[in-house]
Length: 199
Image (cartoon, rainbow, N blue to C red; front, side, top):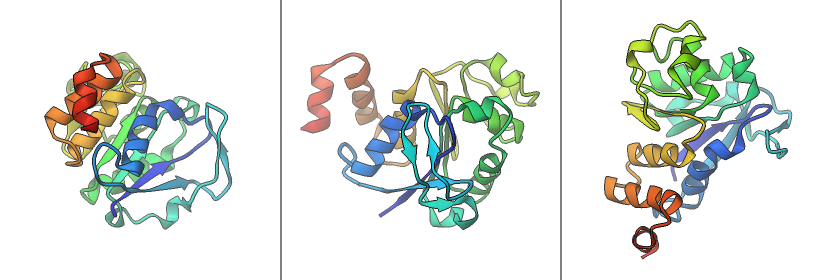
């Protein structure tokens, strides 16, 4: 069973990664359930923006990127306050090991500050949002809902479904046709799309 590491920290934006984590853990549309492991800076519980209390399964120091298959980074108030450096460093280790990293919303700002977006195509909430970090990757910014560049998947805060679709496609869990149907279920209420997924 493949493993997704999900970073957890105070004020984590739970809804941004909800679609992706559910599809990975259950395998309900992909046919391949994954193990989901939460990662904290310490073993102390954190409280998400939605008020859920999460006790990390492991701490950052215990994570070996080559033993995982994905790192998921949600937005949070901590990224916007200039924090999250330990998780940005972990993301760099995953990318160096050739293991995909999926970052959405504020997490993209953390990756930008760490220089991880300088030479990779990416997106976020807005180009100006990332420019505020002082990063050097503006030329690689794409105004799209989700962007995949090699092992990096990025998305803005209004695109959790597209984020999930992009990650599931990058991981080889769905093809383009099924990915389009998946997005259609949530954004177009397309009965035919739903039938394709569950049929």
